[in-house]
Image 1 (tube, rainbow over the protein chains, first blue to last red):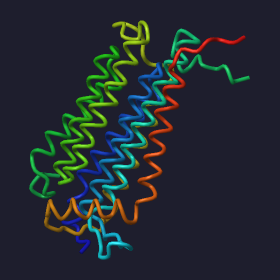
Image 2 (spheres, chains in turn orange, red):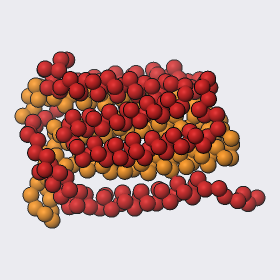
Image 3 (tube, rainbow over the protein chains, first blue to last red):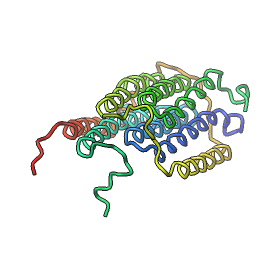
Image 4 (cartoon, rainbow over the protein chains, first blue to last red):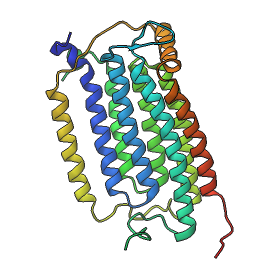
Length: 119
Length: 172
């Protein structure tokens, strides 16, 4: 069941996801403006979603259905990815609203210079 | 690692090259509008990866929610924020070298861990209608509470976004 040949089926997806995650991580570290940081965060979330869908396709053991009965196979990771996409949409909306609100007060969105609460 | 050995088709490699190139564009381009368009390309191609993994419903959600909504939001934010779209503004902070080292180090760790692990893969045939049925059953059975909570979170977040972004009278 877990022979090396089958194990290699999921690996390209995980490697792609790891590379995408690291590019996003670099973006979060290096971007100066808050919109750039938020866009890099979207890359991070998408890397996680690729992982979830890949595991859902290849490594799912199924989830017991209490009310409908039986076992749903290959659904667990997809449900998680759906919730993750939903939360990412909410995060983008709130994040960009905060960025616009910050821009109104400071006339810039340079994350290095937003030190109002730092003493 | 050749395509024949891993069992992923040439479509995957084309999508992967596009995703990585687009992601580099997102983090490296100086023009934020071009950067946002690169983000749209990456999100669209990630939807292609979902199709490659036979998760067609999620690919639809990806295109509708990410490419349709999030990229539009980002572009509107760039439009509203003055001189963010200027062409020759420095867009990186002074610690970008440290950030690159941290990103490459964590990437090396992840790649080592992925190659070192034997994943418990079960290969099974794809049945699209059955897969969609089981997805919906799982969403409405075991995951009904997270589903409802996500709906409430989305509503509260969008209301909060309106509250944050609206013009308010400044009371001193």
